[in-house]
Image 1 (cartoon, rainbow over the protein chains, first blue to last red):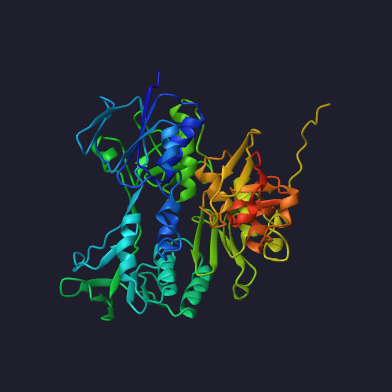
Image 2: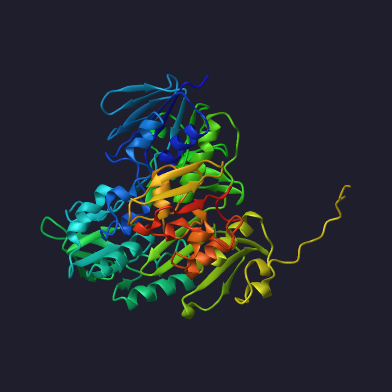
Length: 416
Length: 108
């Protein structure tokens, strides 16, 4: 009998899991351990409308306090799970409290990757992962401040757009030869780089940061080409690392994330994991993946919650992602690695276009720029393993659904 | 605060007093209305806060923008009165607004 479930981590995955568990009728003791002091909240606006001050912290919350009380969800805010003993089925918190569980769900999330170059210990550097991280950034980004952002990925570019919007002089230093190089096609990178430049942001690629300099706090960023960029504030967005320490210290296998099966179960049958911290098999893409996204955190933790209750449901979803930069919306469906060809639909100059990725003639991913129609259609078509007619696909006047190849008719008995 | 009725997928009528200035989606989520997922938090990027707006009210709302139209096209059972609730901002005139939450959410 399952009488106590402990969920560690109060991000998107943890918050969703407790919600699902109650909705699915789990009536036992339910605890949610959050290392941050705030009620569980949404992270995506942190680099956008929360940073700009347009949204208050209250509006980031998934649920009000009353929801947790009403559903008898015991919140342990500002508590960190320090050790996990799978044999005793016990988690110990930083305040010394020990909690025993029948089932444990680890939603440990990810942490911002840190710089390691000389000067990385200087003050005046900011990472953006939590609501508390935003407070000092807001204080630092006054109109006219020179803001240097290391990393031209989602966080770097979204933050750059927000800082520029607030009147800062913004420079983005990207290591690769183009922005968002790990997640989008060159044409999409080019589009966004141009949009940022048009807004007055300096986007510099092929910039390897070699050291940070300053008297006690960062004043300059020095790159391998010898260039120096003056900084009143430095924001670092160079990726995230799965938080696995609690699991790996407990002997659970980890490899770029906590290893789980399609039922979100770790090697220990009483311990499950979901969200950014997991390395899980993707049934659709036929390989193990670690996905950092709201969507995966939500879907995987929902599935994990059902499996905590012994429902035996596989996590099998097509991932999706989005990013807002100025008035542009990047919408991505699927995973674009391991493709055979890219097909451009529409003209980037029109500010609304998409890039389709095919494996053979099967649609595996779509990056849509200001094109919600292709994006939403793609989510379904990718899940269905739709095969595309390449000629039709390149014709932006046809919808994505109209570009599906003629189905192979099967001779199946129709019954009577 | 205007009172807004959400009819949940199971048929339950939930009457919520919603503060002016937030979106219809936020009012639903904060009150735990069943069937409104709103994964993207209102960025018009997920299509999981779809509602059907009572006919009398539909024409009184600001019309859908292109981005919302595109999202709804592949949503579950789109209808003429479909809206993404994150794109509707609550004003004092919303007293008595009634919306129905579809049976499912997301790309179909």
